[in-house]
Amino acid sequence: HGYKFRMVDGRVMPPYITPRCYGLSRRIETRPADVCFVSYPKSGTTWLSYIIVLLTGKAAASLESSFYWVESSWTHPMTESDIASDRSPRLFKSHMPYDMALGGTPAQNPCKYIYIARNPKDVCSSYFYFESGKSWSGFYNGGWDHWLQMFTDGKVHRGDWFEHVLSWWEHRNADNILFLTYEELKMDPRAGLTKIARFLDVELTPGKLDEVARKVSFSEMKTTEFSAMKGVKEFGKFFRKGEIGSWKEYFTVAQNERFDALYASRMGSSGLDFIFM
Ligand code: A3P
Image (cartoon, rainbow, N blue to C red; front, side, top):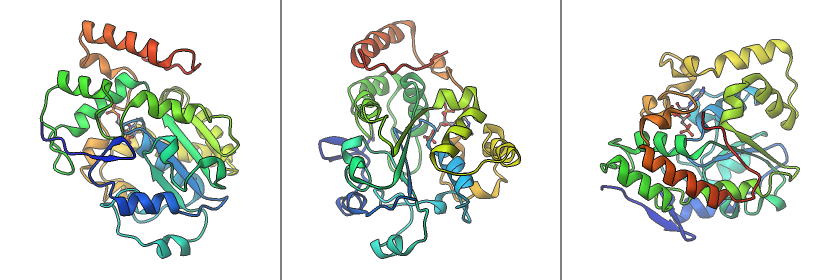
Protein backbone atom coordinates (compact mmCIF):
# COMPACT_ATOMS: atom_id res chain seq x y z
CA HIS A 1 0.00 0.00 0.00
CA GLY A 2 2.85 2.38 -0.70
CA TYR A 3 3.92 2.42 2.93
CA LYS A 4 7.69 2.54 3.30
CA PHE A 5 9.46 1.86 6.54
CA ARG A 6 12.78 0.98 8.11
CA MET A 7 13.42 -1.37 11.04
CA VAL A 8 15.43 0.31 13.81
CA ASP A 9 16.23 -1.57 17.02
CA GLY A 10 13.41 -3.98 16.22
CA ARG A 11 10.75 -1.26 15.76
CA VAL A 12 8.97 -0.11 12.60
CA MET A 13 10.25 3.41 11.91
CA PRO A 14 9.87 5.90 9.06
CA PRO A 15 12.58 5.69 6.38
CA TYR A 16 14.00 9.05 7.46
CA ILE A 17 15.21 7.61 10.77
CA THR A 18 18.65 6.95 9.31
CA PRO A 19 21.39 5.21 11.28
CA ARG A 20 23.37 8.47 11.32
CA CYS A 21 20.52 10.58 12.74
CA TYR A 22 19.35 7.94 15.18
CA GLY A 23 22.93 7.42 16.35
CA LEU A 24 23.35 11.15 16.87
CA SER A 25 20.09 11.40 18.81
CA ARG A 26 21.24 8.67 21.17
CA ARG A 27 24.64 10.30 21.71
CA ILE A 28 23.47 13.86 22.41
CA GLU A 29 24.81 15.14 25.70
CA THR A 30 21.86 16.86 27.30
CA ARG A 31 21.94 19.68 29.85
CA PRO A 32 19.65 20.18 32.85
CA ALA A 33 17.91 23.14 31.18
CA ASP A 34 17.16 21.21 27.97
CA VAL A 35 13.67 19.99 27.22
CA CYS A 36 12.78 16.98 25.09
CA PHE A 37 9.12 16.54 24.15
CA VAL A 38 8.19 13.03 23.22
CA SER A 39 5.11 11.36 21.81
CA TYR A 40 3.69 8.67 19.61
CA PRO A 41 2.69 10.50 16.37
CA LYS A 42 -0.66 12.32 16.26
CA SER A 43 -0.87 12.70 20.02
CA GLY A 44 -0.60 16.49 20.17
CA THR A 45 3.13 16.92 19.49
CA THR A 46 2.80 20.14 17.49
CA TRP A 47 0.49 21.59 20.12
CA LEU A 48 2.87 20.67 22.97
CA SER A 49 5.87 21.93 20.99
CA TYR A 50 4.33 25.36 20.60
CA ILE A 51 3.41 25.48 24.31
CA ILE A 52 7.02 24.71 25.27
CA VAL A 53 8.42 27.17 22.74
CA LEU A 54 6.27 29.95 24.17
CA LEU A 55 6.93 29.07 27.81
CA THR A 56 10.70 28.91 27.33
CA GLY A 57 10.90 31.94 25.05
CA LYS A 58 12.62 29.94 22.31
CA ALA A 59 10.37 31.07 19.45
CA ALA A 60 12.36 31.25 16.22
CA ALA A 61 11.34 32.27 12.69
CA SER A 62 9.15 29.20 12.38
CA LEU A 63 7.93 26.57 14.82
CA GLU A 64 9.96 23.82 13.22
CA SER A 65 13.18 25.81 13.50
CA SER A 66 12.61 26.40 17.23
CA PHE A 67 13.62 22.86 18.14
CA TYR A 68 15.84 20.01 16.98
CA TRP A 69 14.42 16.81 15.61
CA VAL A 70 17.70 14.95 15.71
CA GLU A 71 16.44 11.43 14.88
CA SER A 72 14.99 12.61 11.56
CA SER A 73 17.10 13.21 8.46
CA TRP A 74 14.77 15.55 6.65
CA THR A 75 13.86 18.50 8.87
CA HIS A 76 16.90 20.73 9.12
CA PRO A 77 20.44 19.68 8.33
CA MET A 78 22.52 19.97 11.48
CA THR A 79 25.76 18.83 12.91
CA GLU A 80 26.70 17.73 16.35
CA SER A 81 28.70 20.92 16.84
CA ASP A 82 25.74 23.16 15.86
CA ILE A 83 23.68 21.53 18.56
CA ALA A 84 26.52 21.56 21.07
CA SER A 85 27.13 25.28 20.60
CA ASP A 86 23.46 26.34 20.91
CA ARG A 87 22.44 28.18 24.07
CA SER A 88 20.24 26.66 26.77
CA PRO A 89 17.50 25.73 26.97
CA ARG A 90 17.70 23.63 23.82
CA LEU A 91 14.45 22.03 22.74
CA PHE A 92 14.28 18.57 21.22
CA LYS A 93 11.46 16.63 19.62
CA SER A 94 11.31 12.84 19.61
CA HIS A 95 8.81 10.14 18.69
CA MET A 96 10.75 7.32 20.32
CA PRO A 97 9.78 4.75 22.93
CA TYR A 98 11.66 4.96 26.25
CA ASP A 99 14.45 2.56 25.41
CA MET A 100 15.28 4.50 22.22
CA ALA A 101 15.12 7.96 23.85
CA LEU A 102 17.11 11.03 22.92
CA GLY A 103 20.37 11.17 24.85
CA GLY A 104 20.36 7.50 25.83
CA THR A 105 18.62 6.41 29.02
CA PRO A 106 16.42 9.22 30.46
CA ALA A 107 17.34 8.07 33.98
CA GLN A 108 20.95 8.99 33.23
CA ASN A 109 20.20 12.27 31.48
CA PRO A 110 19.99 15.68 33.07
CA CYS A 111 17.39 17.06 30.60
CA LYS A 112 13.65 17.17 31.16
CA TYR A 113 11.35 14.92 29.14
CA ILE A 114 7.69 15.70 28.58
CA TYR A 115 5.70 12.82 27.15
CA ILE A 116 2.23 13.42 25.72
CA ALA A 117 -0.12 10.48 25.17
CA ARG A 118 -3.56 10.41 23.55
CA ASN A 119 -6.32 7.83 23.43
CA PRO A 120 -5.35 5.28 20.78
CA LYS A 121 -8.61 5.40 18.84
CA ASP A 122 -8.11 9.08 18.07
CA VAL A 123 -4.41 8.50 17.44
CA CYS A 124 -5.16 5.74 14.95
CA SER A 125 -7.81 7.80 13.11
CA SER A 126 -5.71 10.96 13.05
CA TYR A 127 -2.74 8.93 11.82
CA PHE A 128 -4.79 7.38 9.03
CA TYR A 129 -5.87 10.83 7.84
CA PHE A 130 -2.30 12.10 8.15
CA GLU A 131 -0.61 9.27 6.27
CA SER A 132 -3.18 8.96 3.49
CA GLY A 133 -1.89 10.36 0.25
CA LYS A 134 0.56 12.83 1.65
CA SER A 135 3.28 13.96 -0.66
CA TRP A 136 6.22 13.16 1.60
CA SER A 137 7.56 10.05 3.27
CA GLY A 138 4.80 7.60 2.63
CA PHE A 139 1.98 7.90 0.09
CA TYR A 140 -0.02 5.39 2.09
CA ASN A 141 -2.91 4.43 -0.16
CA GLY A 142 -4.59 1.57 1.68
CA GLY A 143 -8.02 1.77 3.25
CA TRP A 144 -9.16 2.29 6.83
CA ASP A 145 -9.65 -1.42 7.66
CA HIS A 146 -6.13 -2.22 6.55
CA TRP A 147 -4.72 0.75 8.48
CA LEU A 148 -6.48 -0.27 11.69
CA GLN A 149 -5.06 -3.78 11.31
CA MET A 150 -1.56 -2.41 10.80
CA PHE A 151 -1.96 -0.15 13.82
CA THR A 152 -3.10 -2.91 16.14
CA ASP A 153 -0.32 -5.18 14.80
CA GLY A 154 2.28 -2.52 15.67
CA LYS A 155 3.24 -2.19 12.01
CA VAL A 156 2.87 1.56 11.50
CA HIS A 157 5.73 4.01 11.96
CA ARG A 158 6.96 4.13 15.55
CA GLY A 159 5.69 0.65 16.22
CA ASP A 160 3.24 -0.65 18.75
CA TRP A 161 1.21 2.12 20.43
CA PHE A 162 0.70 0.19 23.68
CA GLU A 163 4.37 -0.59 24.05
CA HIS A 164 5.35 3.02 23.29
CA VAL A 165 2.98 4.67 25.76
CA LEU A 166 3.49 2.15 28.55
CA SER A 167 7.27 2.38 28.20
CA TRP A 168 7.11 6.05 29.27
CA TRP A 169 4.21 5.58 31.67
CA GLU A 170 6.35 3.15 33.71
CA HIS A 171 8.83 5.98 34.34
CA ARG A 172 6.28 8.72 34.96
CA ASN A 173 7.43 9.32 38.54
CA ALA A 174 11.04 10.06 37.61
CA ASP A 175 12.01 13.63 38.55
CA ASN A 176 12.90 14.57 34.97
CA ILE A 177 9.79 13.10 33.32
CA LEU A 178 6.36 14.67 33.03
CA PHE A 179 3.62 12.44 31.61
CA LEU A 180 0.66 14.32 30.11
CA THR A 181 -2.39 13.39 28.11
CA TYR A 182 -3.93 15.16 25.14
CA GLU A 183 -7.30 14.84 26.81
CA GLU A 184 -6.30 16.60 30.03
CA LEU A 185 -4.76 19.43 28.02
CA LYS A 186 -7.87 19.70 25.89
CA MET A 187 -10.34 19.65 28.78
CA ASP A 188 -8.46 22.11 30.96
CA PRO A 189 -5.74 23.89 28.97
CA ARG A 190 -4.93 26.33 31.75
CA ALA A 191 -4.33 23.60 34.29
CA GLY A 192 -2.16 21.81 31.72
CA LEU A 193 -0.13 24.93 30.97
CA THR A 194 0.37 25.58 34.68
CA LYS A 195 1.57 22.02 35.20
CA ILE A 196 4.03 22.26 32.29
CA ALA A 197 5.34 25.65 33.47
CA ARG A 198 5.89 24.33 36.98
CA PHE A 199 7.76 21.31 35.65
CA LEU A 200 9.95 23.59 33.53
CA ASP A 201 10.51 26.04 36.41
CA VAL A 202 9.05 28.83 34.31
CA GLU A 203 7.24 31.66 36.02
CA LEU A 204 3.72 32.01 34.69
CA THR A 205 2.01 35.31 35.48
CA PRO A 206 -1.76 35.51 34.91
CA GLY A 207 -1.05 37.71 31.88
CA LYS A 208 1.37 35.22 30.37
CA LEU A 209 -1.01 32.33 31.04
CA ASP A 210 -3.75 34.21 29.17
CA GLU A 211 -1.45 34.96 26.28
CA VAL A 212 -0.10 31.40 25.91
CA ALA A 213 -3.57 29.88 26.30
CA ARG A 214 -4.88 32.09 23.50
CA LYS A 215 -1.96 31.44 21.16
CA VAL A 216 -2.07 27.65 21.51
CA SER A 217 -5.81 27.26 21.05
CA PHE A 218 -6.73 25.06 18.09
CA SER A 219 -8.38 27.90 16.17
CA GLU A 220 -5.34 30.18 16.55
CA MET A 221 -2.86 27.50 15.59
CA LYS A 222 -4.91 26.42 12.61
CA THR A 223 -4.82 29.90 11.11
CA THR A 224 -2.39 29.86 8.25
CA GLU A 225 -1.43 33.51 8.58
CA PHE A 226 0.00 32.66 11.96
CA SER A 227 3.66 33.39 11.35
CA ALA A 228 5.21 30.90 13.78
CA MET A 229 3.54 28.05 11.94
CA LYS A 230 4.87 28.98 8.52
CA GLY A 231 7.30 26.44 7.22
CA VAL A 232 5.46 23.47 8.70
CA LYS A 233 5.28 20.99 5.84
CA GLU A 234 1.75 20.25 4.60
CA PHE A 235 0.58 22.48 7.37
CA GLY A 236 -3.11 21.60 7.00
CA LYS A 237 -2.47 17.93 7.75
CA PHE A 238 -1.37 18.82 11.28
CA PHE A 239 -4.65 20.55 12.17
CA ARG A 240 -7.59 18.36 11.33
CA LYS A 241 -10.22 18.60 14.09
CA GLY A 242 -8.37 18.92 17.36
CA GLU A 243 -11.08 17.15 19.32
CA ILE A 244 -11.62 14.16 21.55
CA GLY A 245 -13.73 11.42 19.99
CA SER A 246 -13.48 11.94 16.25
CA TRP A 247 -12.51 8.24 15.98
CA LYS A 248 -16.28 7.60 15.89
CA GLU A 249 -16.27 8.66 12.24
CA TYR A 250 -13.92 5.79 11.39
CA PHE A 251 -14.51 2.77 13.65
CA THR A 252 -17.40 0.42 12.90
CA VAL A 253 -19.23 -1.06 15.89
CA ALA A 254 -17.45 -4.39 15.41
CA GLN A 255 -14.03 -2.74 15.06
CA ASN A 256 -14.69 -0.76 18.21
CA GLU A 257 -15.60 -3.87 20.17
CA ARG A 258 -12.45 -5.64 19.03
CA PHE A 259 -10.37 -2.62 19.88
CA ASP A 260 -11.88 -2.34 23.36
CA ALA A 261 -10.99 -5.97 24.06
CA LEU A 262 -7.43 -5.42 22.85
CA TYR A 263 -7.17 -2.25 24.92
CA ALA A 264 -8.33 -4.03 28.07
CA SER A 265 -5.85 -6.84 27.61
CA ARG A 266 -2.87 -4.67 26.67
CA MET A 267 -3.38 -1.92 29.27
CA GLY A 268 -4.12 -4.47 31.97
CA SER A 269 -3.34 -3.21 35.44
CA SER A 270 -1.06 -0.39 34.25
CA GLY A 271 -3.29 2.19 35.94
CA LEU A 272 -3.27 4.31 32.78
CA ASP A 273 -6.63 5.13 31.25
CA PHE A 274 -7.85 7.55 28.64
CA ILE A 275 -10.95 9.55 27.93
CA PHE A 276 -12.46 8.48 24.61
CA MET A 277 -15.70 10.56 24.86
P1 A3P B 1 -6.77 15.37 14.83
O1 A3P B 1 -6.26 14.74 13.58
O2 A3P B 1 -7.59 14.45 15.67
O3 A3P B 1 -7.44 16.67 14.58
P2 A3P B 1 0.64 15.73 16.15
O4 A3P B 1 0.99 17.17 16.29
O5 A3P B 1 1.26 14.87 17.21
O6 A3P B 1 0.89 15.26 14.77
O7 A3P B 1 -0.92 15.58 16.46
C1 A3P B 1 -1.87 16.09 15.55
C2 A3P B 1 -3.22 16.12 16.22
O8 A3P B 1 -3.24 17.18 17.20
C3 A3P B 1 -4.32 16.44 15.24
O9 A3P B 1 -5.47 15.73 15.73
C4 A3P B 1 -4.44 17.94 15.39
O10 A3P B 1 -5.65 18.48 14.94
C5 A3P B 1 -4.30 18.07 16.90
N1 A3P B 1 -3.95 19.44 17.32
C6 A3P B 1 -3.01 20.26 16.78
N2 A3P B 1 -3.00 21.45 17.40
C7 A3P B 1 -3.94 21.39 18.37
C8 A3P B 1 -4.42 22.33 19.34
N3 A3P B 1 -3.91 23.56 19.44
N4 A3P B 1 -5.42 21.92 20.16
C9 A3P B 1 -5.95 20.69 20.06
N5 A3P B 1 -5.55 19.76 19.15
C10 A3P B 1 -4.56 20.10 18.31
